[in-house]
Amino acid sequence: MAAGSGERFGGLKQFLSFGTVTVAEKSCSLFRDIDGIARIIVVYPPGMTEQQARLQGGFSPETELVSGGRIREESVEKGLNTVKTPYVLIHDAARPNCPADVILRVIEEMKNSGAAVPGINPDSSVRYEKNNESVSLGRNRVFLVQTPQGYRTEDIVKAYKRRKKSGYTDSSAVAEESGIKVKIVAGDKDNIKITGRGDYENIIKRTGG
Image (cartoon, rainbow, N blue to C red; front, side):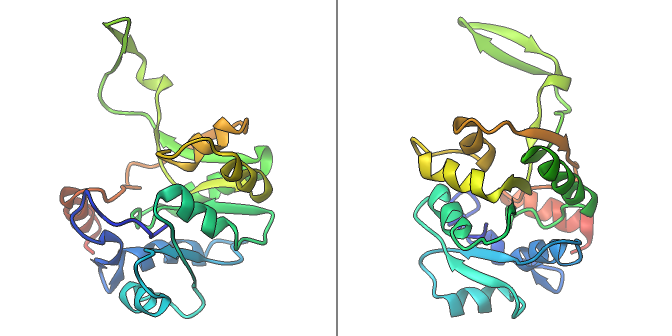
């Protein structure tokens, strides 16, 4: 998923440099050596041509490109419409440092149960508001959700077609609304999502990119 406008970042973060490649191309490269990956499909910003996206992203020739939509849900759906395999992984281009073992755990659980997402427990204490009061919630019961997220293609395609609104923060919310039970597997703190400038600077510093 590389179709975002980068509004919070202040630019197209997916096309920034990450070492010798771009952030988006680095994210694609994470999957090339994973056994069983049949195709890599990049959903790019709708205001660009395919040629512009390929050039700006520095994508390898075998990477397939699909134009995105106005909002994330439309972009995901456009990407899903090109998938022919029984299973699909949905990954944020803005997570260029996902460890291979996270991807493998998602694939294994996806094949076992049909839907899997990686998540990590927060370091800080967690509280939530209930009846105008602050209530403590154990950190081991709360997960910060990451990508890639894995699904049976048929199930997640139906879920997106049935979605009732917009503004979902990730595909697992769309899946659960449709009745799909999503399993959580161990994520990784290094699987940072680049949202703001500080995230980009942090991941470059940590990886030497």
